[in-house]
Structures are given as structure tokens and as C-alpha cells.
Length: 489
Ligand code: GUN
Ligand code: ZN
Image (cartoon, rainbow, N blue to C red; front, side, top):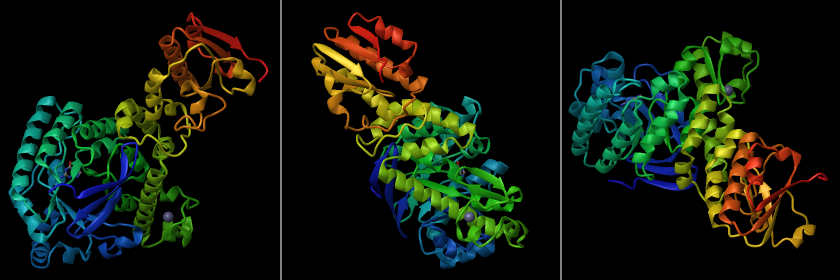
């Protein structure tokens, strides 16, 4: 059942992978455009032109409408949509969360999805919204798990089966649910009921939900972030280990005359310029786009182009090993995203376990970078530095420094390390000449730790004005540290 997902490259908790389905292999991370079986702004057969490899539609909508149901049962889902690549189908759970009720059982909808030839099917889970009582979250989670168990027993081969992780905003429930589902061996793990978090810009809570659920899963399992379609948050979600996304946003936003970009959304009526080079934006002025009779379709197309542009940007960043730099840039698009970035780095200990030990040059992008997993890893490495005799610490050692037994480089956001390590990742980082308080704090804490762990060594710290920080006093107070103010720099 397992091993339908091969991971090829990694960065932070993000990865490029290959998911094998009955209708072919999909390279992740990717977005599945949502197809409404009733209304199609863009035809499924055209979706590949935008970069789509896989689609998602709703089996409940097909099931409910006789004409669609009969055609799907007779000719199959792929003929119904006129798309021969992989198709995932949702179960009606979202309708359940909106209307409180659906006219289908878990068993019926699983059976139906198998019969129409879905590639990835979804049981009738209960999308418990954020902030409900713990009682309700536990009760609904129990029903969800029971239904998933039944579904797992019904589906033996052919169709891949998704096991949605629920648990509302309770981190322990999310983790426990993920652990329970892991034992049942699903093929894809969607994280459910996160749409309300995204709609209200609660990206920081979204980070908690994703990180908690990921902790309960096997790291090698493919993860789908249900209902996430705005490109602004792809880099962040991928860095946390999400592989699949679905976008109804491209069409829903277009209907509201909204124009998506990787750093946010414009109302098309406020655009004087089109900040994009997709075929739609190159062949229209903003005025023409606003007035076009098919404005919704044009906007949907633009929205899809930028969605897949961002997917490629994220994938290239994983290859280059600078996904976290991209995340830090994207998280400056909205203050709530910046909160999410800060939340992301509260999970640096966990990210560090996933992160490759060496990759492209670390770029310092702002105070949050001082909390990156690589910096945390360095802090641990300090415990292995053995320093004996005299040691000079300064930002830029010169050849005249060889009267000391040891020469150490001081480099925020890391701290002090033997100069032999200068070219080793991540110490070969590109950093700012004007370090901020956050990076100085980490660096001094690490330097204090180093001096305390080597009490017999005598440290001389050559201070430059730009390295002033309250923790300097604490460093200077140590018996084996002397601080000298360096003037001629
Ligand atoms: N679509 C958006 N969120 C959810 C969810 O939690 N479960 C299912 N099945 N579909 C969704
Ligand atoms: Zn465009």
C-alpha cells in the first residue's frame, strides 16, 4: 500500500516528491485546480497548459446530480471531465461543514468514488472548525476516525485513499489523530478544516496545525493542505512539509474580480498596471481586462498562471536549498504572515531534524533569520568546540593575530567559532554588516556558552562598536573573558 511517494530533494521540511497514482506520476509540490462538475470557467482539458498535473473535483456533487452520476458510472470520471491525468475527488465533507448535513453515507461515497475510477478518494470526514470546545473536537474526531477505518477496510487496491487529519485547533488532537491514521496506512494525508483559519488570516494558527499534524506522521508520507490555494502561503506550507494543495481560489477570486499575486491580491478595478507577464496580462492593459466581457475567465486564467509560477519558484528554491529565504520574503507580504514566520521558527528544533546539513549559502534576511534551524544547529555544535590556551575572538581576524593559540571568528547570528570553519555551511553565510539585536543576542549567548564550557581557556574579545548589546556585560563578567574595544576598523 505504501511507498507510492518518493522524495527526491529536501529543504527545511519541504521536499520535491513523486506521487504515483493509477493515472500517472505527479511531481510535488503541486496544486490541484478544483473543477466544479457543473460550472467550468476553464475546461479541465486546458488545465495542463497552465502547469496542472492533477485535478480535484467533488464526487458528492457528481453523485447528487443524476445526469452527472449516470455518465460518471457509465464512462468514468476521466471521461466525464475530459482529463486523462490523475484526479482526486472529495467526499462531500465540505458541504457537510457548510450545510450541516449531506445525503450520502461514508460507505456509499467511498463505493461511488471507486466505481467512477477516482485516483485519490476521500472518506466522509467531519471538518471540525477552529476554536470549538474540546468535547466537540474529540467527539467529531472519534466519528471521523471510525469512518476512515471503515473506508480503509473497503478500499483494498486501485484507488489511493486519503486520510484527513482533523482535531480543530487542538495541537495534541491533531498530532494524535495523525499518529492514529499513520498506523492505518493511508496513501495521502490531507490536513482538514483549515479553510476558516486561512479565510481569517490566522496563518500563525495554521502553522501550529500543520506542524502538530506533521509530528504525528511518518515524514515520508505525502501531505495535502485541504483548501489552500493562495500562492502567497505555498512557500510557508511547503517548508512545513505540505506536498499537495488545491485551488478553488483561482475561480472564486476571479468571480469576485480579484487578481492574485504571490504577494497578495488586488481588486482588478484598482489596477492601473498589470504586474505580471502571463499571456493574459501581456495581451491586455488593465483597462481592457476590467472591461472585457469575459473578465472572469481572463482573471481565472491569470490566477492559475501565477499559482503555478509560484509552485515552480518554490520547487526551484528547494533544489537550491534556499526555501527558507523564499519563505522569509513571502512572509513579508502581510503582517499576519510575518506572525506565521515567527511561529514557524518556534518549530526550528523540529525543522532542524528534517533539514539537510549542507546546502547553498545561508542568506540573512532579517531578525527572524536568527531563529533558523541552522542557527540552532550551530548552538548545539558549540558544545563540541574544545579551546585550550589563549583565544582571540574578532569579526575579521588578520594574520597578525597568530600570537594567540586560537583565533575565532565572531559572526552574528551564529556566535564565535574556530576560523578553520569559516567556509563550512552555514558559517559561510551572507550576513548584514549591521547586525540586529536578535542576531547579536544569539551570538552572545553562544559565545558565553563557549567561554563557560572552556573555563581554562583565556578569551580576548575584540569588540567593534556595531556589536554593542546588553549581553556583552554578561560576557565581560566571565573570569576567562577580556573585552577590548577595537577602534581602528
Ligand atoms: N475541503 C476543505 N476542507 C476539507 C476537510 O476538512 N475535509 C474534506 N473532506 N474536504 C475539505
Ligand atoms: Zn497575469
